[in-house]
Amino acid sequence: MRALLIVNPNATSITAAGRDLVAMALASTLDVTLAQTERRGHAAELAAAARDEGTELVIVHGGDGTVNEVVCGILGQEGLPGGPDPVHP
Image (cartoon, rainbow, N blue to C red):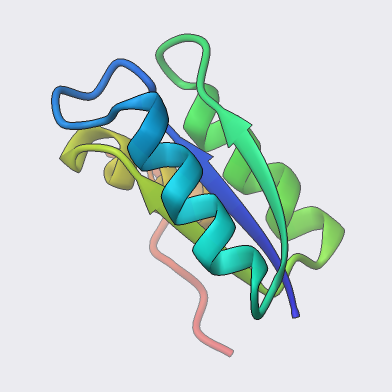
């Protein structure tokens, strides 16, 4: 299964050692790619790209702001305040 691990290195509880431990643990069972956020909104961009590329699993290692960005990125404009309602399959 292809997975994307999105890490916010600036989140309070995130350390390089913790990031590496999580990545190694996931890599034991998944085809995981690690991506670190570089700026505000980057997690949303990474998540949207993963959705568009058909990545099967997105994992977030960061705070609630990072999780929020990833959810919005996966949902697209439907996940943004003032955006259209989500379309249900």
